[in-house]
Amino acid sequence: MSTSSSPLPQKIPVVVFIGDAFVDVQTSPLPSLPIWDGDVTCSSVSILPGGSVANSARHYASLFPKHDVRLLVTVGDDLLGRAMIDAIEREGVVSTKYLETVPCPMSTCVVLVGPEGKRAFVSTRGDTSVAWLDAARVDRSGLLEIADHVHVSGLFSVPGLMKREFVSLLAEAKERRNFTFSLDTQYDASNLWGAPSSGATDDDGEAGVLMDLIQLADVFVPNHVEAVGISNAHCVELTSRDRRDETEEAAQRIAEAAPNTLVVVKAGKSGALVVARGLEAPRWVPCPKLEIGKCVDTCGAGDCFAAAMMGRIVEKMYDKTLKFEGVNWKDPSLDEVLDAVAYGCKAGTWCCMHVGACARPVSRDDLLDK
Image 1: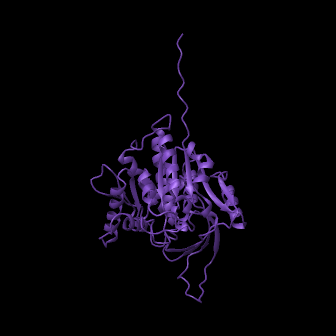
Image 2 (image 1 turned 90 degrees about the vertical axis):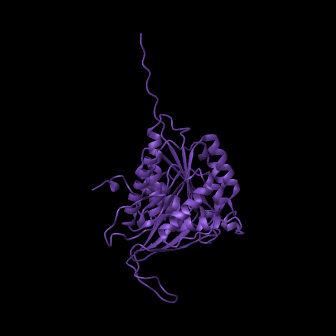
């Protein structure tokens, strides 16, 4: 009597997002910024869930609903903190189980939107909710023990993650569990960029830790300004003055300092730049062109890009194996990485056509060629 064995069930990849959560108080497009003692008017002001990692997690869960997405952030024990939780619950794409309420005000970002998608920010720091997330809280969550991929973002807003304790925790878990790890710093308002000799305060995290995290990452996803700031602080002073050349030089310097890390620089309307082993030269991936007037708000475009790109790569890795654990990062081919970056560019462009960093998450239907 012959028997046939059933195929093993595919494991659903667990994707963990760790980092910042803010409530965005955002204007509709302004004709200009106000001057001191002056005033400008706008048609509306919105209160929206925000923060780099919270935006990326929500976009990712909407684009890749078959993946198990977990979001670990801290939120304030006040009206805005409750508004953040309520908004994510109503949206229904990400569980609020790991949104931890802490006894302080909710971190808040005032977002001023200008012509053609230009933006400026005023963010709270100090004793607000983002300051409460640290290695001990990440460890207690248990998420690193079930993760197949970990994405950390909003790093400069969360000083508790810019500590050697977090690097050690992440490195040990990554070696033990063999998950993949992506990193997006966001802008550094201190302009120190985590430099080894910066003399950073507790509000800035520990100096020199950033490069340890970049070297630990499988993929690093800064934007142009962040790549230049980090390269100048950790590598060598850049010599290029042309923006495109400067992007390439910064990316290559970072890649030289972190040779095992795929570096993808978000470069706005120029698309994205990829520096990877196996490429003889940096590779530019263009983004879709927008008609004049279609770009209304660039806030959150990089978060949307990162979610779509990383999800596409994780999806490729997931399709290649019945058991996701232990997949080597080298599995995606260069063509698959470039395809993922192009998908990220498409998602980022979609975000620029809508007011708000993530007023609603992008869907697969939104990115279909029409």
